[in-house]
Image (cartoon, rainbow, N blue to C red; front, side, top):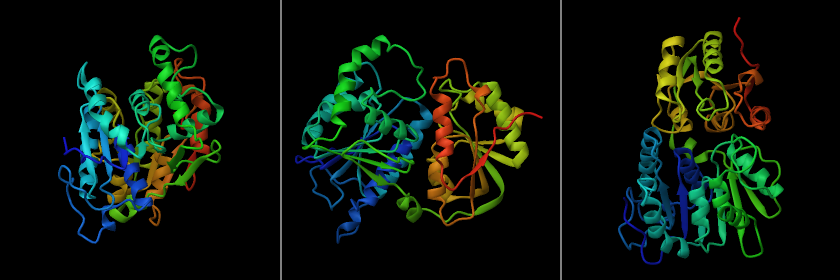
Length: 376
C-alpha cells in the first residue's frame, strides 16, 4: 500500500475498481491540467512521502478498491505503476480480501472522505462506491467512464430511476437489492446536481443529453496519445473479445461460431481477450478457431496505441468501438464492429440487452459496421 495522504487530506479522491476506470481518471486529470508537471520542480516518479505537500496535482489520490479477479488485479497494478510514474499517489485497498475487509477499508477511508473537496468515481453502479458516497461531504462529484455503462447511468439519472446495470435481468429487486436500496437511493440523490453540489460526467461515449445541471466533458484520450505511440501497424486483422458470455447475455456456442466466422472472413490471427473472459472459453476458442489468444496486461486502448496492432480491429458492441478510434486517431487503423444477432442472446438476457447493444453499435463514430456473421 502506498503512503497515506498528509493531515490536510487530498483535494481530490478518486475511486477505481477496474483498469479502464483508472485510465480514465488519468485522462480526466490530464484534461483538467491536474498534473504534477505544473510544478517548476521535476515531476516525481513515485508517490510523495507521508505528509509531503507535493507539487500541484499531488492533491489527487487514486484509491484502488481491488477486486479478487487475478486478471483485473494484474492490469490494475500495471495501471497503478503508470499513475505513480505520472506523480500521483496511489492507495491500494484489499477491499474484498475477506469478511472484515469492507469494514476496514471504509473505516480507513472515512477521514479522507470527509476532508476531500472532490470525489471522482469510475462506477456509480458499484455498491462499494455508493456506500462511500454516503460518507463524503464533497461538493464536486465526477463520474469517469466505466465503459458503455456510463450511457445507461446518465439515462437512468435523467429518468430518476434506480441505478441498475443494463445487463441485469428486469423484474423485482432481490433481497440484497432491497437491503441496499436506501444507500442506492441516497447515492442517486448525491449524484443529482443541486445548488451546493456540482456533477461532471467525463466520457468518450456518445451522450447527447444529460440531466439539468450535469456537466458533460469530452474524453478524447489525449493523455494516451501523448504518452504512447504511434504504433507499428501490421497488415492483418486483430479481434477484440467480449465478456457478453460471462455476463449471461450471449450464448457461448453462438459466440464461438461468430468469432470463427469473423476470423475466417477477415483473416484475423490474434484474439485480444477481455479481462473477464473465462480460461475455459478462451481455451476452446484457441482450439476451435486457431486464433492466438492474447491476454493484455493493460487496457486495450494502451495496448493498441503502443502496438504492434492490426490494420483492422474487429469487435462486437463494446466500449472499444468508441474509445479505440479516439486512441488511434491519426493512424491508418480501421475499427469494425459486428452486430449481435438477436438469436445469439440467452433466455436469461435482460429484455433491454438487444436495444442497448444496438445503440452501442449505432452511435459509434468512425467505425465500419458489419452485419451479424452467420455460418455458411
